[in-house]
Length: 602
Image (cartoon, rainbow, N blue to C red):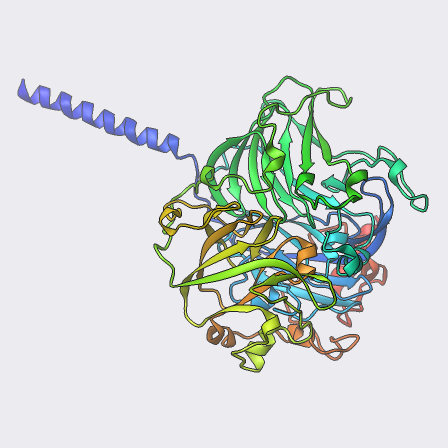
């Protein structure tokens, strides 16, 4: 009898353990996938073309003839070989925003800091791996303000073990941008003159995935303009769940992004997976990225997608905003619905959201998995960001009293690698040299009356806290338990921010406001990190040759060899293809170009 009772109890315990294990398995839907990294090759041809993203025709700096440029899709662990074929008629460079570039600092793409620019009529190859990052990123020119004219596109890095892979069915990339009808060189020339009085160029429109309508009555008579050029449309299948990867590629503007009647769950902030956080509106500043999950759970219909330019954050003294419609739209079209414009209404709550001009509340964004945030910093760097008139009455960006001045043909990395420099002119704004791996806090005070989205190259950082006007950072109240980690964060107007990162990546890393007009005005700093380790690395020969001031620095030089694989982007029917495979930039014959030529004949 006792044995029988014992067996019964043992049976019950076994069943309980089995059920508990089953529950754990069901609650852990992510399967570990053994992914074998691949080499992905892309050809990005930069040239000017007349396009009409919003109906008004202008010359656009295109990537493979399109704006935005093609989306590059790779997988965590992959090696990227990206051929930049520059036919813009001027130098260029490409920055791969958000990538650490560990061991390949020379491919960070910043003229004056990590490379000399790529001359016109030249092909240059960026060659790097992404061993430990996944998420939503983008690429853009870092030469002058070329990305404002069109040189940009998205990069999506898939994670074979995405913790949310069972929570969505499809992905959609959404690029938001402000749009200017004048070329950036004209806008910069005016902005960096006494006449502007420091007022930034105001956009003429906003775009979603490179499209919007424009009121042609506002256009100058000399411009070709088509009314109702067309909006972007996102096709939803009822019942499906969509991961929207939203990227703000603007020069100046932050957005409020929403879809009428559809709630959104934030799951990623700039490569960091977060706990699901439900929102109606996504506040997204320049260069920031989020992934949100949206479920197509409404009655079959059409719904407005809204990306409201936060025009209230622009300089109030400007009158150029009179011809701007800040309510940028696209359409969500449910399968089976008619093709009429939506009649839906925007979310009715939070009517004062335009007054924020700040990021999503960081206290609402939590990492999906707790991280080991260092308890304290080894060094604290204090920076004061402001704008002041120089001796010529031009309003300049100033950090700790100094305006950054680019030394375009003697970048900082060259000075460290080849000249063994340890000190730099004040106008290079080198505010930190870290000779050993250490934990760094940066406390930035914003003395300006506008917000600033600051981006740190080569790292992500924990946002420990921020505050608005008339507040001060209190280290006893900063969040070191579960802060969000990202690479671009907004410093409120006349406010402050405290960020923490680990300086363990050898290289020269920019830290700057990502409002492009402020970059051009000199609101830029840089850090020299582990210079001795950097000197032990071997930069490629073709990269060194970029700093030779000749019309073609590839004279007598062949690029580094790399495995030849099929071209991923078949839209690249460019001048090199038309010349039957002869790559004039590299001065050699390229069978890939010839192959694409013959394929495109059919």
